[in-house]
Amino acid sequence: MTDKHLSTQFDSELNALSSRVMEMGGLAEAQIRQASYALANFNEEAAARVMQDEHRVNLMELEIDRELSSVIARRQPAARDLRLLMAMSRVTANLERVGDEAERVARMVQAIVAKGGALRPLPAGELRVAAELASGQLRQALDAFARLDTEAALAILKADDALDREFDGFVRKLITYMMEDPRTISAGLDLLFVAKAIERIGDHATNIAEFIIYVAKGADVRHSTMEQIESTVKSRG
Image 1: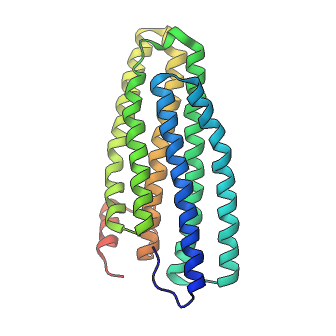
Image 2: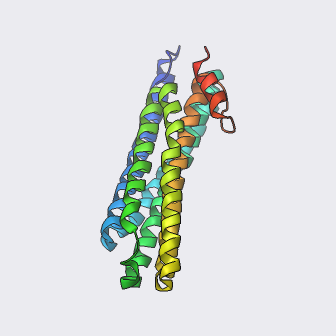
Image 3: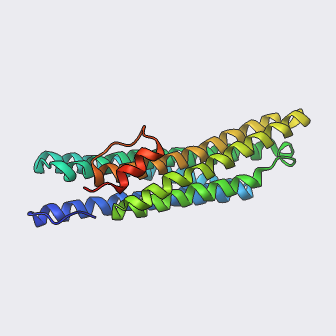
């Protein structure tokens, strides 16, 4: 994941931090899968497990941040090494927010189950497709971050439109259902919050993709057009 360093110990510290970030990413992915299962099956036990795991995600963020601060203070890295450490901090912050969104989905599942019959006419099953897309984006982003693969990062940024289209289409359909049957409005609003949480998970995956380009190219592309990002990725350096 990193270039060869003069300090073997520094190499070891960077690799250990990278492993911790990937471990946190794996836990966040597991939360999404569990939340998706809870949503597809309206399973309250699965929803409860998502919320239990959220505490572990929060602890990992704090631990990784402490380790990052220690390495920066002791090693005083410059250039790409400093960008890498800063990017790790931002990735863990985004993973913690992914956990928050998974927990939000789980809480909404519990609320929907409590409403019972009002849910039946609603297209809840369609959200699983969006959840799988978001989970896939996060997994690809983490794999690309492990390799600092800018081409893969660019592909993730381009693919984000698919999740946005899923979200927009679901919202239109959900509004139609609620207009036709006002009894579904309460449960429908819960599903709307679920859909928004899933969309945000995709947003966090694209944030990670942007951090890859930042580390590898030294360019902050967060507010750039796709054409500008492509140019940055294809540039030397």
